[in-house]
Image (cartoon, rainbow, N blue to C red; front, side, top):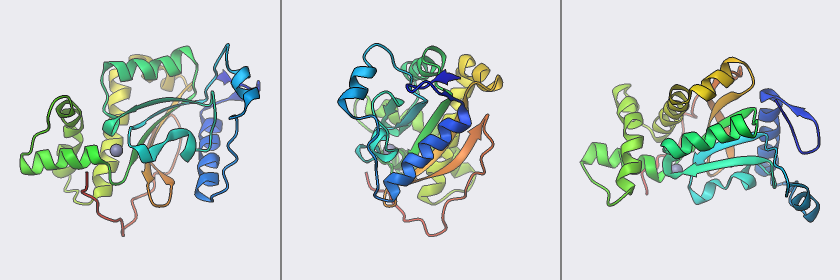
Amino acid sequence: MSDDISGGLVGPREAFDLLLSGNQRFIDGAPEHPNQDAVRRAGTVTAQHPYAVLLGCSDSRLAAEIIFDQGLGDLFVVRTAGHAVGAEVLGSVEYGTSVLGCPLVVVLGHDACGAVAATRAAVENGTTAQGYVRDVIERVTPSVLAARAAGVSGDDGFIDTHVRYTVDLIMERSRELADQVDSGRTAVVGLSYRLAEGSVRPVTSRGLDLPSAPAPATAPGSDNL
Ligand SMILES: [Zn+2]
């Protein structure tokens, strides 16, 4: 549990509701741009009390504070291509939950993800990437292999599998996070974002009872990088 900047107590469920209501404003084209003024800026100089850690893909179309209509001090954002997870990412997530007291961790994947598409190409066609991009692809590869083994063919299925894999991975790798979820202080939610609509769909959750919605049957394919 953590005091938010206005002094109220926010738990995992309240944090999730805050995030979803902001996303709904964004979907509706009616953002309020909260906590983005000079008063908020001044009020967050000496301390921050974000209510959620957002671990998402670096994709430029997935700008966290915009798509969830949030402001300064609201979200502790960790983004890597394909939300690939390494030690620094795990440390950043733990900093958000253990030091800053965030009651919610969101793993945010999205359709038409270039990192997932490049990994599929690497697995299916034997293509390779240059430099450290190869490292990203190696970290996404287990998800692609698992999706293929499960008979997944569409883009959404691969994205959902990678979101689930990432949630499982951070829970498995971080004892700190797993303990926080066990105690009910923190929840972890995997969401899939749809670029065209700006909407999120729950894929999986730990410590929060959420119905996971299946991917729409008419999902557009997207293998573009
Ligand atoms: Zn992506």
